[in-house]
Length: 260
Image 1 (cartoon, rainbow, N blue to C red):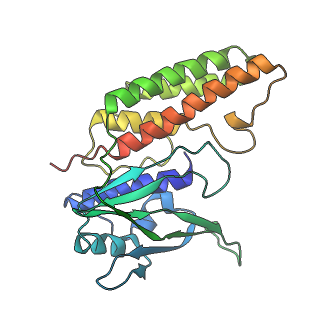
Image 2 (cartoon, helix red, strand yellow):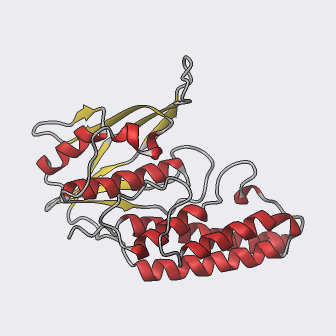
C-alpha cells in the first residue's frame, strides 16, 4: 500500500484507540511499520494562543483532547493514482464540537549522510482548520466491500485476458480471498490497525485494500500500456473504478473504529 496512505490510516486508527483509552502511542515511530523509513517527524497542534510544533505521535496525541478532539477520521481523496509524493489528497480530520482540525501530510526526501536503516523521509503534518460541523465518517463496510469485490473481479477478468498479466490476476484473487478470511491480515503494514476496536469485517476490508494496491511507478498496474485504443479504454475504465474502490475501502475501514 502507498506509504503516505498507510501512515495516515495508522495515525487515525491508533489515535482513536488512544483517545478511547484502548491504545498506546508511546514510541510509536519506533514500533509501527508505517514509520520505518521516516527520518524526522513534525506535527502541528492547536494551542491556546497559537499552534505549536511537536516531534512525536505521543505528543500529538496528548494535545488532541486538550484541543477538544473527540475522534479522528481519514478524509479524501478524489485524486487519481500517482507515483509521486504528496499527490494522494487524503487528510486526517480531528472532529470537535465546533468544527474540525485537519492535517495534510507532507513528505520530503532527505538523503544527506548515510542512514543504515534507509530512513530518507522527512514528514510534516501542518495544521489546518475547517469551520462549521465536521464531515460525518464515511463508514459503510458492507457497501465498500461489495464495490471493492466487484472492482477486483472486473480487474481480475481483465488481467485473465492477457498471459503477461498473470501476476496481477493472482494478486486480485488473493485480495478477494482476504475478504472471506477468518483472521485477515493486511499483507503490507499489518499494524495499521490496533489490536482492539475493529471488527473482523473492517479488518477484512483493510486487508483487501492493502493487497489490491497496484498503483505506483514502474512495473505497477498503472504503468501498463496497450497497443489498441479499445483495450486501452477498457483498462482505464477498470483502473479508475479499482482505484476509487480501494481508497474508499481503506477510508471506510480506517474510520470504523468502535470505542465500546
